[in-house]
Amino acid sequence: MKKQWLVVFVTFLIGWLTLPSITSASYPAQLTPFPTPTPGPDGRIIYIVQPGDTLIRISLISGVPIEELRGLNKLTGDNIIVGQELLLGLGGPTIETPMPGPRPTPTPEIPTPTPLPGSGRVCVLLYDDVNGDALRQETENAIPGGAISLSERAGKTALNGETRGGSDPVCFDDLPEGEYTVSVAIPSGYNPTTINTITIKLSAGDETYLDFGAQKNSQALAEEPAISGEPSSPLLGIVGAFFVLAGILLGLFGTRLLRGR
Image (cartoon, rainbow, N blue to C red):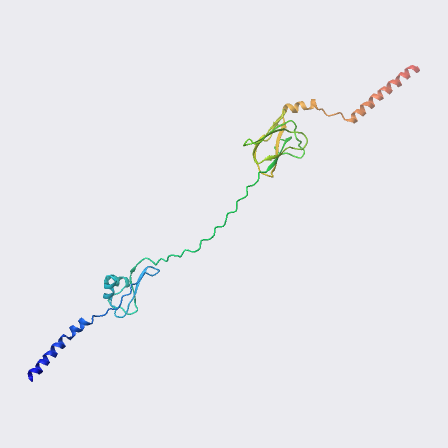
């Protein structure tokens, strides 16, 4: 009987001693799942401490050395609390690929209308610059006999003319648009007081007036009195006729007196 109790006791003791190893082999320890963190918009990789986490466990699972974890989070020890945010490192910000939207319909270009070629007008006046100031006054009339030359730079138009007296200029109408050179040859007896060649740009609808000045030279001024002297005053003619008539009457009166004697 004692032997039977002894066998039971030994069997119970052996079973009790081997129970922890069997339990450990049958039921392995369960670890808290480690969610994979993703970089935030600022590029930081943040992990939220879960129940059962330790700094060593987070270091082993995330692959970040424990010293680096302490440095990134300014930790002096290994104490962490549930819900604490731990910086694991820096990564690139999440890039959202924009979804392509509908393409805008291009606005058709309206063709620019080509302007039609137009014409303009150029008028030329050669005036007698009496005072030589190169500015035409109303009392300074035109000089006839000056040769006018008008030519377009591209050679499309070339015209000639002659200045006339009075106050009206010589005009060239319906000239095509372009760049023109206008020259005036001064007639004999005059010296120019302004430039006698000018270049202008003529656009459609333009009406350009050009004044060229000239002044009589010394030879023409010296010959002027002999060519066109001023007429005698009528009063002087009347006085002269009166004296002639008086002389005749005195002569007749004297002859009668002599005969009466």
